[in-house]
Length: 261
Image (cartoon, rainbow, N blue to C red):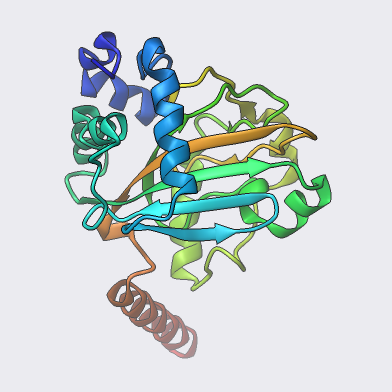
């Protein structure tokens, strides 16, 4: 058994209730402790060795991420990741939380290391408080132990209720993730860093205010991320963009008509 037996008995609706309220749920010991060395070995093999179905997504001094194409990559020598990718909780929860209209977009492998604090804060959206343009459920698994020194994910629990509405306002105004307003600095002090042992699972709604932690000198962080996104709220899709522009044009015309009548 790779996944913790207790995890197998977790009720999807229990997790959904936590997500509905907090926007985030943390499950410790998602992977059995005795399988952690194998988890790390599989992660490093996939990350370090070129393979069909794995491509570089981002390559920066401080952050490198690779994505796994589930249609092309074969998990022959990676039984732990194969079992995780088929986890019943992931799919059942996504179906209920995203109202049945979901797709697993990708599995992402990420390594973050210290370069400079200025580099992390100034150049990368992930390291400043933000919400995602598309509505996702993200499943993070810590590959190494993560404390406050090596860049824990930080979140503002419950903020998804407010930012879900704001995301839709931003989209209706035609703002994308680069030009819409960022979360105000006063929320920084309220953000909660999620520390945890290797094998910890973090599930969160991307409408929750969140940011990647700054890795300190001589530290690093490795995670595996499973992304399930809402098809109906994937505003990066062409037809969704067209619908937004039509709606925006219609609203503008309606406003002008009201002003002149």
